[in-house]
Length: 273
Length: 273
Image 1 (cartoon, one colour):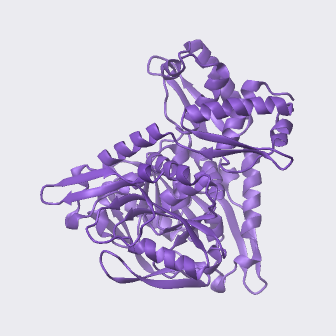
Image 2 (cartoon, each protein chain N blue to C red):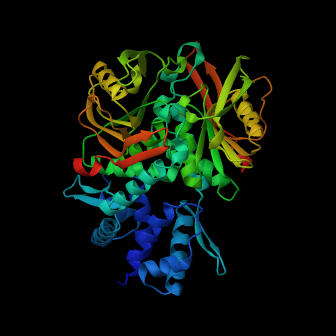
Image 3 (cartoon, rainbow over the protein chains, first blue to last red):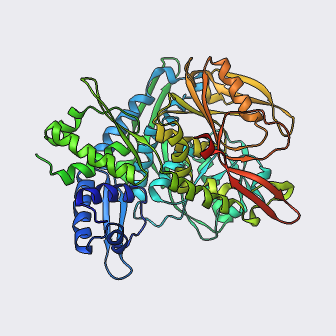
C-alpha cells in the first residue's frame, strides 16, 4: 500500500513526537510508507520547517549508512517567555499563602498541561546534552521529572526519604537541609542507577539547595556525574546558596505573609541559555 | 501568510495531540492558517483517517456554532495487546524477586515510554467518559496517574500517607490495608478537590484493594464520585477482593520465591472493554 504525502506527514509527525532524541533510519520511513528515500527526505524538510517555525523543536539529520533523523524538543523563546510570565502570575496569587509563609502549589504541580510545558522548556535546554537519566526526590518533583524525561527519552530515578522494602538493596546518605539546618536521610535503590550515568537533577522547589546538594553527594556514591540541575521555582535567599550551576524557571523574590503579597520574578532560565 | 496543506497537517497534528478532549472551533484553524473552513474540514478528515488506522486515536466533530473538533486518544487493540504482552514478559523476569516475595518494579515505573503507553491504554478506556480529575496515592502511582491525566487533559490530585505543612487544611481518613490488615491513614488537601468531582482512581499495584477502598472513602468526604478505577498490575488473591469494578493491564498470577518464578498474565483490560 502506497501512502500519499499528506498521510505520511501526519504519521511521521506523530511518530517523531513520540520518540524524542531517537535516531530513526530513513529506510524505516521508506519501508513504512513504501516510498522513495528522496520523498521521505522532502517530507522531513517540511516537518523540520514547521517544527522550527512553531516552536515545537527541530529535526537533526545524521548522514551515512548508520544515519537517520532525530527529533529534538526546542521550545521557542517567545513561547517560553509567555509561559513563564503566566506561571509567575499564577504563583503570585495571594490565596496561595499558608501559615508560616509556605506556598500552596499542588494545583500548579497537579496540572499536566502546566507541568508538560515546564518539562518541555527544561528539556529544551538539555536536548543536545549527554543525559542518561533524570533524578528527583519524592514526592513533589516527580511529575516535573517525568515531563522532562519524556522529552529527553530517558528514564527517571526517584530518591526517597524513607526506606522501602520493595526497592531491594539501597544506598543512603545523610545531608543537612540548607534552610532548616536539620540532618535528614535520603535513599536510592542500588539497582536503579548504573555506574557512570550522566544525571540531570530535577526538582520543583529549591531554597538554599540542601536537598539538591544531598542528591549530588548521593550521585558520588554511584560514581555518577551531574549533567545539570533544573528547578521550577527557586526562592531568593540572603544567605549563600549551596548550589551554583542550575536553571530555574521562576524566582520567588519576596513573600510577605502580613501584607499577603508574593513577589515572583522570571528565573535564570534565559540568562543561563 | 497562507499555509500549504502539508504545513497545516503537520501543525494541526501536533496541536491536536497536545490537547486531548479539548473542543477546538474550526474557525480557530481557519484563522491560524488563513484557510477556508472547507479546506480545514478536509484536513481533519485526512488526520482522522490516519489517527484511526495507526491506533493513535480519533477526531470527534461537533456540529453547530458552538461546535468544533476534538481529539480523543484511542490506542488500537493490536498495539495494546502487544504492549501488555511485552509488559508481562518484563515483569516475569526472575531477577525482580526481592526477599518476602516483593517485586522490584522501579525500572518499569521509571521508564517514561512504558508509563506513557500504559497511560494511553488506560486513558483510551475513559476517553469519552466524564472525568474531572485523576487521583492517585504517593509515591509509585504518580507517574502513571500523570500519564493517564495528560491523555485525558485533566488535573491530578495526590493523596498522601503523611501530613504536609505545605498543603494547607486537609481531610484525613483511616483505612485498613486489605492484605496486611493494618490501620493506616491517608490525607488529602482540602482545596485540591472540588465538591462533586468525577474521579478516576489510578494506581500502580492492587493487592486486596484496601488502598483503593480507602481512596473511595476519602472521595465520599469530598462529595466526589468514582468514575473509574485503573491499575497497572493486580495481584491474584485467594481471598475476596474489596473492589469489584476496575481495569488492570497485567495480573500477577503466581510468585514462587523458592523456585524464583513469576507467573504474569494479561489483566482484565480487554474483557472489561
